[in-house]
Length: 73
Image 1: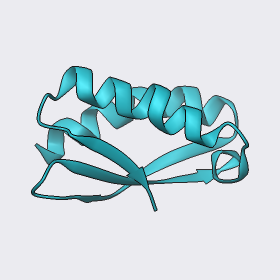
Image 2: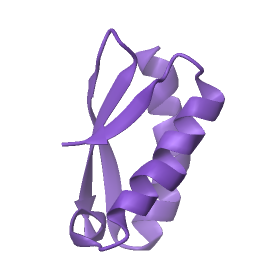
Image 3: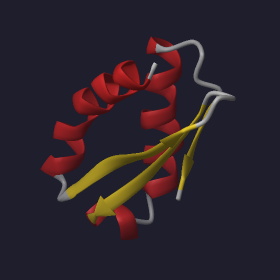
């Protein structure tokens, strides 16, 4: 499942990088929780929560049903 998560994140990464940010996979738990770190401009952006839940989590859940949630660390 980790390879699939990384593949989805790679698809999201260009949009984040276009705005000066990025996302890093930190951990994938056995319970299906994906922990990521938003870096660059995304790390301090007031819209980071929306990006995390509205984009990263939504896309991961759509592509990988085993993903339960995405958390920022």
